[in-house]
Amino acid sequence: MTHTTTESALFRPARLGPLELPNRLVMAPLTRNRAEADGVPSAVMSTYYAQRASAGLIIAEAATPNAVGQTYPHIPGIHTAAQVAGWRRVTDAVRAAGGRMVLQLQHGGRVGHPETSGLTPVAPSPVPLPETLHTPSGRQASVVPREMSAADIRATAADFARAARNALDAGFEGVEVHSANGHLLHQFLAENTNRRTDAYGGPVTARIRFVVEVVEAVADAIGPERVGLRVSPGNTVNGIAEGDTALLYPTLVEALADSGLAYLHLGYADPDVPLFAELRRLWPGALVANPRLALDEPPLPASERLLAAGADLVALGRSFLANPDLVTRLRTGAPLNAVREAYLMYTGGEEGYTDYPALPAGSPSRQAAPDTDAR
Image 1 (cartoon, one colour):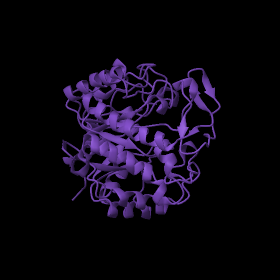
Image 2: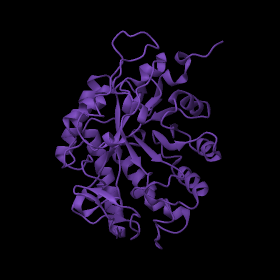
Image 3: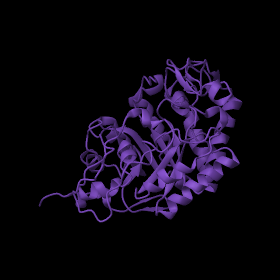
């Protein structure tokens, strides 16, 4: 029997915590720098996310749980009343379009700058980012972060919990705790950024402690069935060098295996790497896998390989960025829009954001979209 895209398990319904999902395609969190200067989600963000509401689940872009956690200009927050109200406009638009959203919570740690947040960044250890940072006045040298005290650690975990409650108030179905991509929680996990000698540093069992405490605080605040955790084993972005990836992540996953979380989200997931199979074996709940695709690589074959290897859902980033109707295009075999120039990712405004075309209404399967923007 000939395999067709309509037979793919990607288009079967799934359950994730309390959510019934119409398909297994997840829109991965994508920082786009379209919030207002004060971190309030802008009107154009409502349009952008509503356009992509056919995803089984949208994981909204990283939002900061407190002021010192801000990374770059025009990053949304979830720690003020105005930010909560702004996100409520986004979730209302997505819900009206038939979609479901959770919010990724991200603290930048050393990936921050006083010119952006008005505060000296904090981190597990005073180890600066080995590269410049984008600030309101342009690229600036990174600064040495302030080492977090035990009181800072407790306060930050509480801020994550408060942000999770704010996310539910803003209309999200839950949150994803971001422990990847070289941001604060990942900085605690990695040997080169965590040089502490107290209970939060040294052996793997101590370096995972802060992540576990944050996840537990968030789960206590809103219920574990509304919480996901994002990790990206071996990812070296933002100057990270874990040193012991093969031990680190099984230890972390085992520590949270009985927590009842809605899902574990694996970034840069590769079913051919032994660690993928090990984490799948150790994690009893839903597994969301995010493949690392080449720019011109079709997403469907890689997604189906991940499902065959044990993933429950597949998260795609750039594919959703360029194709508001990605689910329909993949289901019917229609051509995909190409991602436009990289500089449009973070420039603000509608260009390269909400102006990617959807297929014409009623267009037959495999009909090319009249897309003058794809290049």
